[in-house]
Length: 352
Figure 1: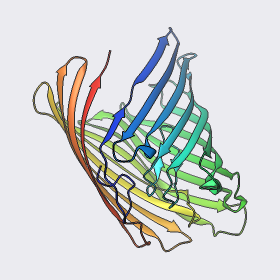
Figure 2 (figure 1 turned 135 degrees about the vertical axis):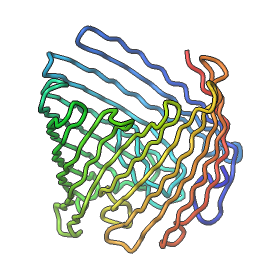
Figure 3 (figure 1 turned 90 degrees about the vertical axis):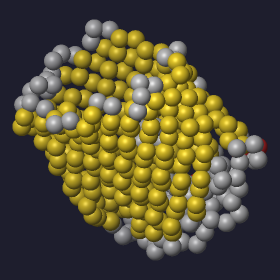
Figure 4 (figure 1 turned 60 degrees about the vertical axis):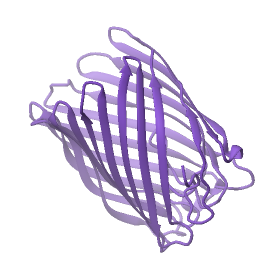
């Protein structure tokens, strides 16, 4: 990695060795399923051992099928993370967006969540209703007050109604409310309201996916910041023109909590990925993502492009060997927020 901190000036390069074992314990009954998982993520920096760290990820999942019309999925998770790249937003395994500020110190934080989704309606029914709720905590473990003002509790709520218009196609109407309760910054306490319409379909004409679009409003409890409103959308489409070649397109626009210099971030992200199997054991991955972050209450605007290519060889049933390259660039009008980054990788994946 020729720019391990994703910075514009005083860049530092290093060989990075990562070891990521994952353990999963699962069981299934007639109408229920349970899973416990733990993943350790250890990174060692040959040229900067002060940045060596180990992340921990715990997850517990449970699913219940009470009858043909009623089912429930539950999830709880805990993550302890250190991230030395201080410039980008980071999305955790639980979907929580973590802004990291603009300090040179590595961001050290924990996230914890518990939530579930209840579904009413049979899989083949004309109508279905999903109700989702979650509770998330974000806490920083840095020295002093670094990112202390970003610590918060987040409570997302969601209700989605589906109406079947074809055997494999459903229309949807979705309402959301997310409450942001900041521990040390009452001015940032806010609620996000969104209403979206769209459609979801399964394996129709070699494609599957979900598209949603609508409007969103971010309303602050205090008058320190102006309320924000605008369009929002989410789309994820998979196209498989051949059994051995698959394209995945995803795009989203939504407000996320701000950082030290803004009240909120209007983030728009688009990603296109292509996976192709050239031989029975040889496959490639090509991806491109574009992110436009507009910082509300500030003139800052960041444009981030990331291109990645990879080649994987399935040497054994239990062993994959891969090589890859990723190029990331950030073009920002904010001082010292632009950067270029090249990452060359070789990886081994073994499973039992």
